[in-house]
Image (cartoon, rainbow, N blue to C red; front, side, top):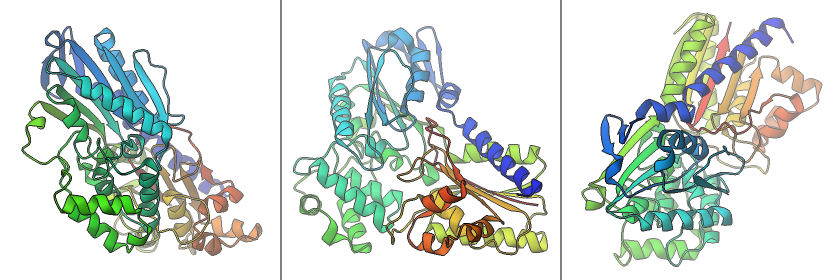
Length: 444
């Protein structure tokens, strides 16, 4: 491998890690929460801890353990009890807050038991209680508590169908909220009339509060009618369990209550604070790229759409830079964030970041020096042990030597095994944070 390409790879990894450090949950929470004696200050709002008989900590998400560690460091002995659910392996050594591990992206029985425990503790809070809720990406799958008449298996199947059809995270969460006792403001309803502070690490494009972990502590802007339209849009009605379809119809008829809405009294004593997100990670990544000597263009933290199309558009911009020095000159760094979707057509293994890198590699013929790194900030990409993958202008050449056809792997949604054969998977292990994806393209 040429030395210059190797340096590009090292630079790409350094840029990614710089972005990751910016959204470490402990740092993020302590930027917004400080304690001075019995006064807890949260984003400019003060709470007198002496006024509360109990302080409970609840929540869920891939960053939950690291967030809980930070809260324990701030509140210490004032915590009465706490329960959070995290994805398997995303752990920290904490003292007063209990950790449940559960399945993600498809909920499992452990997550269900954790959600029951969280809901019980939330429901025990009274007017003399302060409840601190820690929410991060993955919280939707990690707090599965279905409504009456819908089983955990029904929710699992519904989630799988939505993931496979290419539905956006906003659409998936709209359905999840209407099948849950916790999501769509359900947790705030359980906590009421206690005082509620929710600290949020955002993994949603645009940082929409009602979409992050399906908005357990905020009012919901979606309706049962929206859910029915999502099923129609993707033509998946026949794949959705009857119990789910029946519940949606009961909601449309007014026979079961809607999710919480604006103006309801349960939100009178609540505060929601986003402590970190994708844009902050991108800003730090840009600082690192600038420091390394690149002309850097931060495209957007709100990239959505089909992964292959997004990859094609990114490489088109890179090609403009390569050929014309526009919109920035070489050496150049393109950065973007957000969360794309993959419509499953094959039977392979992979994730949106690995598929982005593979689709990009197929468009890189003619480049002299280019590196593409796409990875999830949580350390996992789809149902794999890789955060993402890295590709360069020699990826296709190395594939030819190994007698593997990248197009066949892409058509089969098998990006994991393609990059595994080239030793180009990017594995970080659990990062204990989650602010969607970072995509880095370097051109010299």
